[in-house]
Length: 239
Image (cartoon, rainbow, N blue to C red; front, side):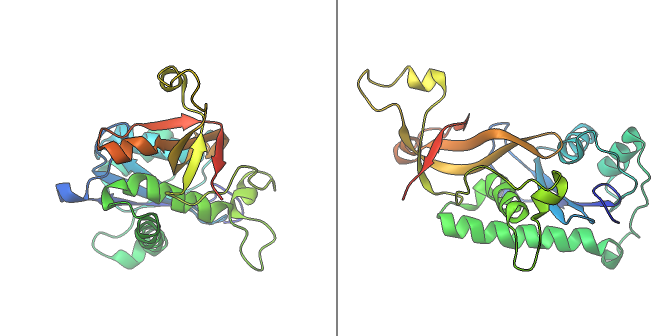
């Protein structure tokens, strides 16, 4: 594989216990798909609420966008097989019960799990926040230019252009300008920026970023009320 899409691998993550389910604005995340592009090493986590074909297609489309995929390799999960067929991708599958036949994807999932645990530990947030922590870990890994590399994985995907946004740790204290309904609830002479908890980056299909960050009001955590994750463009990292 020489360029993005020459070979993409995927492996499903099934969470059998309700205690392992993750929180999301879309509801409980009961499963996930770990996706890897072999040529660029781009790593991606797609939390899902079910093992449906529709959610599998959405996860793969968010990763690939409208780019061409020459070959897609996965385990024998039915939803991934059906999604690949719907896209018209060449799709050899791994040998059932032979983990080494899908080793690349499984190593990617292992890296995601380890990185997500470390990210949650560093932020001091409970395991149920794994959908946000896992995506933040993958995004941070993809935009990092590691020692000895000419480009980051992100730049390899986006024509050599490095990530231009703020690089903020998961769970960091920040100040942000709330979405309009939240701003209308602020006292007239209160600061327009409020303290919040940084939860990551919002990407659009094709793993592109248009400047949107994910944050939650710090007061939501303090008060014990439902935590609403906001998608905003203006955020300032705390010193």
